[in-house]
Length: 66
Image (tube, rainbow, N blue to C red; front, side, top):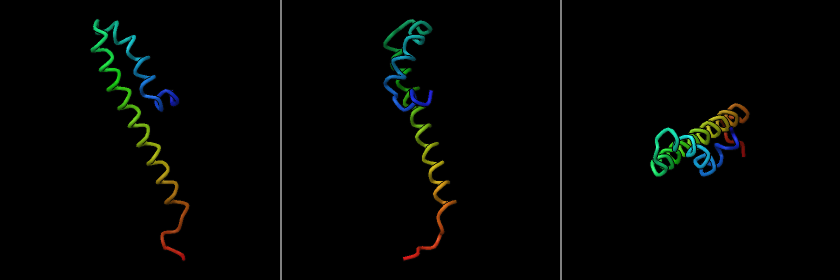
C-alpha cells in the first residue's frame, strides 16, 4: 500500500473501479478517486517529512560548530 500511495494517479485508477460500481457514474468516481488518492499521498509525504525532521533533531547538536 505504501508503494501505491507514492503514485497517486495509479491509486486513483485502482480506486475508480470500485467507486464506479458504488456511485454508478464513472466521471464522479474518477474525481472522487483523484481527490482521495492525492489526499492520501499528501498525508504520507507529511508523515515522512515529520519523521525525518524528528530524526535529524535527535541526532544533531543544536549549536552551530564551524
